[in-house]
Image 1: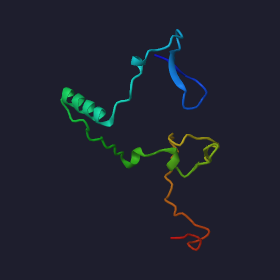
Image 2: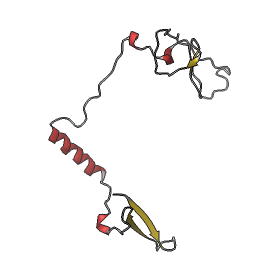
Image 3: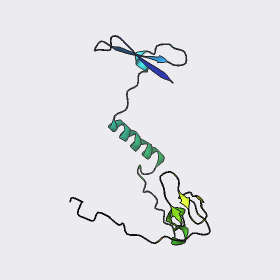
Image 4: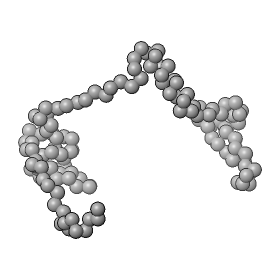
Length: 124
């Protein structure tokens, strides 16, 4: 139910908050205000749901492993140029999606990061 909170008073310690229904405009009674459940209540509810469903509450996550020939994303291509505003394919001179693929894919060799300032400016 959509609720609108209004504060009545001078804005100080004597302010009184009330909640109103956005659909009809009537003030909601105090019994409608629900408190957020505590962490213990949430854990108990999760454990009870797991018991009800007959499984563990924390199942192991599946691992996805792709074969090397399946990893043909544009972001790994030698022709892909990444830029903050637009990523481009320099082979076809057009915008490219980093997660896209094409038949002209060529794997980019791993490049070592070149630090123009050397280790002199870094503080350990």
